[in-house]
Length: 155
Image (tube, rainbow, N blue to C red; front, side, top):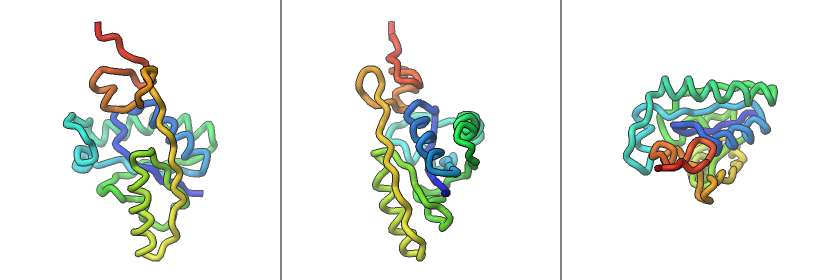
């Protein structure tokens, strides 16, 4: 089975790792990584996003061990639009987080328009930080938590 997922992944955290784990349980994985132009448009906050090349290197490093654990292949591709790679016919699954579920619905509409079978959209629940709020890249960048959800002591 072929699995698609996408995002900015800046920085990678345990919530992302849960998405990756689920994706590799389902099959070989293609990750659409947002382009330098698209990345700021997909964020709800105004903060710097690292370059595509830097994010890609970090992402591939994260994916290598998870892929090996599941004996799966992976590829990281440039994502230049929000619906991106998942509208291509070869995919069977789309792995999303709760806030990107609607994107999966839109992708399946586009796939139907193109005569492709719909994807099975797999929603992976958020990972919570130790304070009970979700782990997010923005919270990490703002220094609230670390990549594993531990609250950072601001003293």
